[in-house]
Length: 116
Image 1 (cartoon, helix red, strand yellow):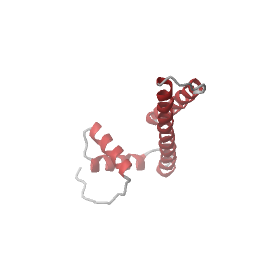
Image 2 (cartoon, rainbow, N blue to C red):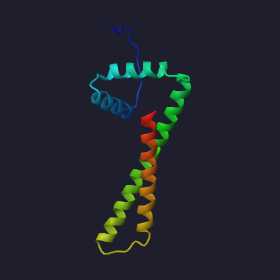
Image 3 (cartoon, helix red, strand yellow):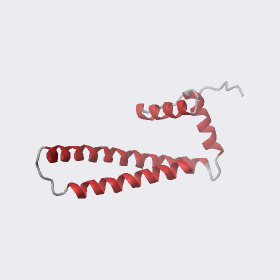
Image 4 (spheres, helix red, strand yellow):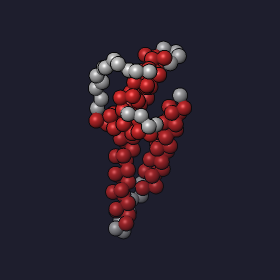
């Protein structure tokens, strides 16, 4: 199939990086990957608009959760620095447990999204 129609798409730098990595992973050029993805969503059962909006909302939530986990990881690094220098952090075990639970939930949500 020869694609002869050209459209412009605006993405953030982060979105473009994600798309490029995904395209490379399946051996496609970025433009071809975007076209294939758009056509697949448009042809999806259950209404492409509803599915796309639902998926977009989930992705945004996962990205926000991922950013929060990164901040929590930075805080845990600070706790580790205190502990490694002989200091005490009574709340460290609780903080680690909370971060691990949150990371597990984010990972489970990402896996569930990938299955759809």
